[in-house]
Length: 137
Image (cartoon, rainbow, N blue to C red; front, side, top):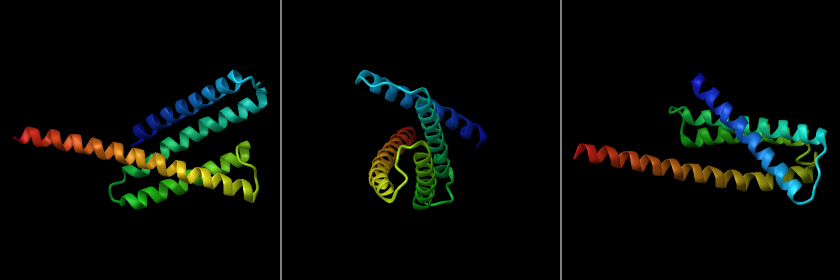
């Protein structure tokens, strides 16, 4: 379990850093400039965001819980952490309107990504089951 958590932490941190670098390249490519203080704050935000999104998937490892329970716990964990981080870093304005817009963007993205992972892993299970059936024949 600890090995899995460490691996996911590493992957999440690397993914967050990659997102930040690609974002910076995009800003620069379109004629923008970067302030070092803002860069550091956003870089730390992206890295933390990548870390908690990747490690929170540990909820899906608990086979005693239903998929609904796992999803609710994952959703609550990542949304609370994401919105706290977003307000602190300045990605979302600290206001009711900012929160409403943030939620309006966050939930559809969460649903799309969750569905994509669900379908991917369901397909993987199908492939594994077909492989088991072929060995039985």
